[in-house]
Length: 220
Image 1 (cartoon, rainbow, N blue to C red):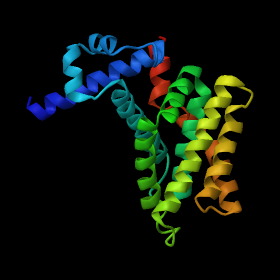
Image 2: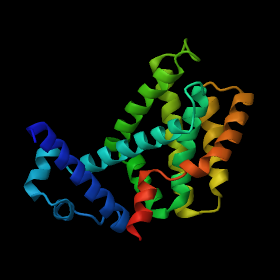
Image 3: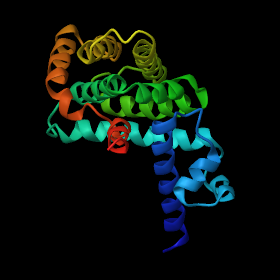
């Protein structure tokens, strides 16, 4: 195994171990030493790959957001419109928030940390710009950024609602996220209602992101 492959393997082990511990104990209660032990790597070597615990968590969250998009893509043909693709990703995140308080807690940590959320916003803004350029040819980079920030705020609010009130159903959370996010990215009312309807029909199979799937697996 080459050095690059070894580096990638260590990073995968560390992120996988961190995910298990974060889901089991919570982010704040998990230490880097516990992560190194669970990953089977030396404590000092973690700092060769990650700056700190936030760095591990940032990579974990980015991986899970990418998994959510891939899950949405697998359900659709190549001809499916971009609003439905994005709507299914956002619906899967809303469902993940609904699925487990620990998952919601971890997403809350991500949204509250600018170090982590900055990476999410940067990646998401680029994706939204690339996917919606044909639909929104006159939009500037800052318009895509503003819409992405508004989406992040909506998802963060859903996390707070889950952790503090927990009154909304999963379908209501999906509806709330999409009815806010889709118009924010230029979808007209008819498109918004169509995507919400389709997302509610398709959301159950893609409801759990890798985070919520891992949480269930850990409990077996």
